[in-house]
Amino acid sequence: MKKIIVLFFLLMLKIYSFNINSLEEPESDTLFKILDIKDDSIRFQKLKDLTSTNNEAYYYVIYELIQNQDDKNIINVFKLWQNKNEIDNTKAFIIGSYYLIQKNKFINQIYRLLRIANKNNELKEYISFLRGLVLYKKKMKIAGYNIIKQQRQYFETNQDFFYFKDAGEIAYELNYLKDAIDFLSLAYSIKNDYGIKTLLDMAISKKGLTKNEEEKLFNRVFKKNLEDAIDFSLVDLDGNIWHLKELSGKFVLLSFWASWCGPCRVELPLIEKLYREKIEDLQILAINIEGSKEKALKIKKMLNLSMPILLDSGKVVQRFYNVSSIPRTFLITPDQKIILKVIGSYKDIIGAVKDRMNLYKK
Picture 1: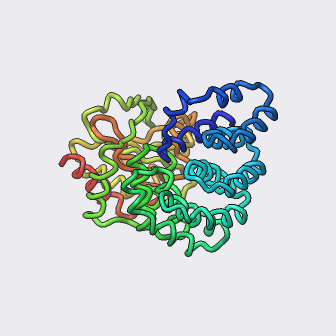
Picture 2: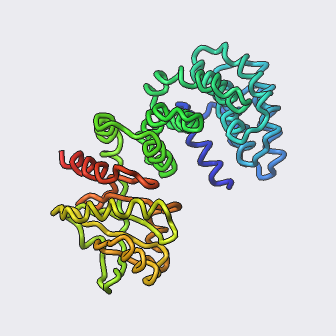
Picture 3: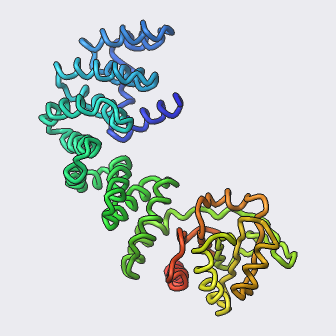
């Protein structure tokens, strides 16, 4: 946990454009002597004392408190900052506030401090973003979201991942799916994050896109951030072994399903219909996650399926592809990249697959 928090702090330093290189050669070595103190309580107290003469110490105080998850003392340090209201301390305040807001701690105190900090014009967009997050946490969701959305132009210029991640997650929670797709796609274009990609896929599946919207989104975001498909070997109902890597040069459609899944029984006939078109550069594989030959054969007969049905007996491939719900469909490119992920049963799965294949070929 501490390692994650330290990485969070360092990333926030980078995101908010701190000149951390200037800290490597300070005018005085007092600050770094304090940082070498092993006793946590003594080190923090000396850092707190130093903030009266050295603004750089604020960063290290916040760092120490975040690392130790000492949320209450972060608020105490903010009171020291409040009396000075200097730009460096405001940046430290932004980092600490964002950390507490994500934990939903001291929301009312932070909101009061944000009203004071908003006087600082140089960081007003960051302060407004935090105010929006706080209002959202205080159940004033629409008002908070509108404030966050108003800062979009500034953060798009500055390519801030955290802004677009939070804005996208909130838009999705509010069911503003068009906004969610917009914000999450921008977040994903900045940082190839699996969680963001999953939520983006869910928003797209829930809303649906026109062909024009899909093409624009694909060219702007997905084409340059395609995930690698993970190789696997599975046996089908006839005893044939399928290796994904041996299908290189073709598109491959993976359809994960189970006999007990109602939506799967709706979608499998659609996948079968596509299979029977015998598209030359497309191989379709239906992967049964139960690994039961008996159950798979029963569904095959019931739905009159002729496509290859593979048995994922140990749920290995299911874990490889993070399949937490079914049906789940993946389209893989000839160079073994995941180009499409469909979560749940989709009535136009055939059109979605063909459209994405054509987009990739352009």
